[in-house]
Image 1 (tube, helix red, strand yellow):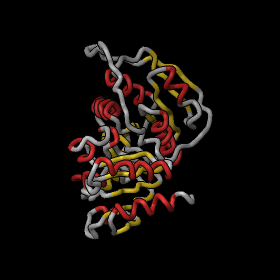
Image 2 (tube, helix red, strand yellow; image 1 turned 45 degrees about the vertical axis):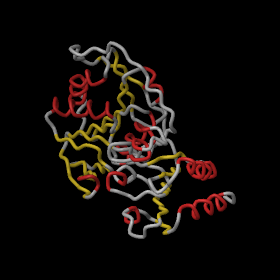
Image 3 (cartoon, helix red, strand yellow; image 1 turned 180 degrees about the vertical axis):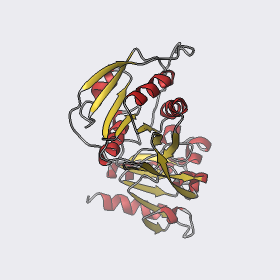
Image 4 (cartoon, helix red, strand yellow; image 1 turned 90 degrees about the vertical axis):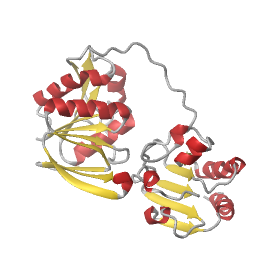
Length: 302
């Protein structure tokens, strides 16, 4: 049977990767770098959890050990969550394996011969489809897989680590924004909102919908109305909600690249030619200052 290994910083992302492996009929194992990670993955449906003992931090220092583990276990594919840490680990592991790699893919289909991937290129202007022969390493964006369930046995192994880099200290980043990766509905605000005081209207809509609030780069970095972790786009967050409601968002390719995983995209914009309508499943051409209050009223009946 074909074998897949997966790794992601967050259990929810790892569960999606496990789902990809199981959907392809692969025997799928989840890699964990602590006992806490291993226990968090124990109900995610993997065929086994491989917990690395004595692994150095940051986890990239264990890349050579991971590559050797994959080689010993006959892994056909290594699926890694597309976080900053995951990208580093995946690239180093692929180099040690001397194998094919594809980064930040939107979808992965596994069969007995190839991993077939799709990913956005050139700021989202082009979608590439490629087939990678095994062994292969793939970093996967959020929303590409459907989690499965089931209890998994935990196995402990020791990995070789590169001790040339040592973690001396760490300070948690204080985040004040919503966790958009966990949100089923996201209301995103763009530069079409004229005044910061008008954000109260957006917040009221989000509250009615039980939604997180996202934004474009200009709102977070230029106007600084929202924390940077709520900025969605090519150099911001990749999100995959059930509904992405874009309010006053023009829809430049850099922004749309971050929402390709959304199941439904709806947009409100006064410009009928706004690029967001090319990405949207549903669109309302109208003044957001009229449309949003109407949506708030309509949401009261949900």
